[in-house]
Image (cartoon, rainbow, N blue to C red):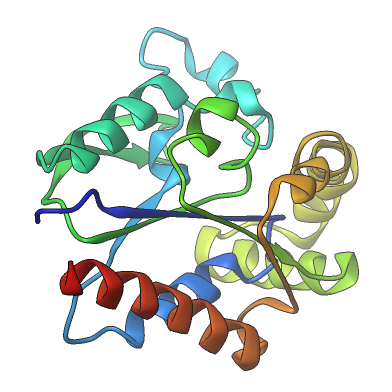
Length: 211
């Protein structure tokens, strides 16, 4: 790569459809693989804490994330250097001993609820996207995901949403919308917005290849 990679941030509340948006964009570039870096992989390592303390972790708060490491890795990828992406073990509530080898690509999409919250991350991004979906749709999606994929009870998911997820969304996630260059309503269902986003990326890549 002769040019600096294009870095795109995709933020939005839990269940907003930001992962669906990211995957839909990536599918449109099958001949030119895009790289997705998930903020969820960068939760802080909690190996030094006893399990009862780990269970109290508020995963919807900015302090839950190791943004220093995420920023370091993004800078390495921008410099065309590979990284070892961490893996988070949700059962143990700490970082796994495993990692994923990641090679740099021309387009890097950084996806997560709070990727627009940290100014240092925003400064590395060429395009900032916020996926904006109604709260009732988001809670239903989260409910279905946590019950099916994480074996949670309905009561525990609802209690966590009311006491933690919703207030954190209002305090930290929703305000980052003002930093977005593009706001995509209804997430992965908004095919027009996804097409426009993909077209913009394609235009940037074509302009760079012509230089």
